[in-house]
Length: 584
Ligand code: ARG
Image (cartoon, protein in one colour):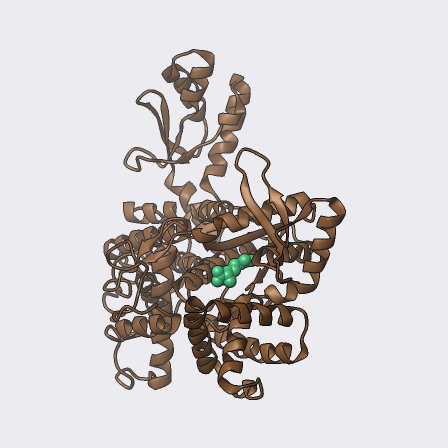
């Protein structure tokens, strides 16, 4: 069940439309664009008038006259060309807020037909330093995963490690070059492995024979050569440890740590299916599937390269088959930047031709790039290097430290506690800065303001929550309890109305796979709460009933804000140690 205020009006409109013989498809309201005039508006009269060639104001008035008979409206007017503006009675909004406060899902409903969905995000590569693109994919994917679960879908998240392509052969070749053999491989840690990859990359860029060696070793590895395979296992293991560590610091989680390599066996099956169906052909020594039909012909998918190795295409197609056969998924969603748009178009089309995922929805969500101050070039470190995740977190922590007391300055907050809090706020700053932007737009990494406690930032929302926690603690000490919600002041009313939108916000974020809808709402809610907080004293309210009501509104706001942060993948510390005790 959801606790949307609109439900009440929509149900009444449904009856009215039936009675007046109007098309029921238009019997709904939306949150008003003019909060000064109304809480909700119904624009049905305009659409209905167009169809019936009638005057919209006339139809609007007819509907409004019927609505006026309902007991939940404070005022109804027909404005402009025929908009019906509806203001609800305060008691109706108050009652709804009371119910939300009692509901463990805070008034949020579930999807009607839950299904299973695989979310493919993160996508880091063995031995390569994670960059801001892997950060975006992880941060967005984690949030979408939480939203999907919350609305009732079954989610399986998979990191889909890049662990099987030519870079693997490149590192192995580089190690053999330096050591003469692979005997020392198992002594190398992630720093050394990454360094080998860097060297190999430089060499392969300049030297065709080095590229050739790397290709041959990759093919041998994929063929199951024992020595290469054992060495590769170590490289992969060390990388996974480092990647897990990095993502854990960001609270980005995965159910599966599958990679391209896990799809190897299935790659063989894909080739067989393609041959059996007669949709593959040999072209210049490679085995390909042509994708030349339709109005937008694409380059072919290469299943097997001329050297015998499988490609990024093949592993992705095989992975689809595994997710469908072994995980019984009904939907797969991928999160990468726009450089892989063509790749996924090809993979999806090949999967369709191969008929390996009938009735499975395949979706590629493309995110924009994180840019530096000029708005054009990718975000880099101050000295021009690639911004890796660890540097980013450290940088954010340094900013946050400027706003926090030092260890020992606040009772109960020693080194460890301050460090934990610093991390929680720093990660919130990074994630919120990312998630407040619509997925497909890139954004400029705001170096100066992203970790501030004011403005549209993660720490601002955390601070709003901590402020409410502080009031609630004091109220408890004073023996004050939450009580029935009464809405008198306009700031109380505005807050309760905003709270009532939460179900819609979550559902829109779910259907659009767009966490920024939640981020935007969260910021708006925190601002409206701040206005309420300044105008409506809680503990100092004029009557005990009013104090109890305001405390309940504040607690509900706190719970909604916390839920929203949770859905964004952001923690909400109990205190922020930053003057949240001022005021009350
Ligand atoms: N490893 C890839 C990269 O770094 C991203 C993987 C995306 N997922 C997938 N199933 N292809 O670009």
